[in-house]
Length: 103
Picture (cartoon, rainbow, N blue to C red):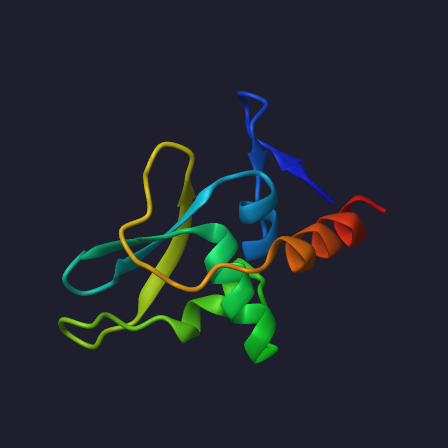
């Protein structure tokens, strides 16, 4: 179920919703404030293949800073471009997931 902010923008609650709505996933280190931006489609595919929970709140414990080793928290952005590279899902896998999401 989509939630909306005051401006009418959708608030994603999962990595898949970030991908479906084209929001980049941003991981920010809790200690050194280092920021890494993930392509949401590639990140969703990683979580899908590993059978991890894609909820943004529960996915937080999967992220650690590569510089200091501290945990990170997740947020999203419409304007930031990905600065990491992960394998993308095939077109068939993505279309199947979108079909399940819309029904």
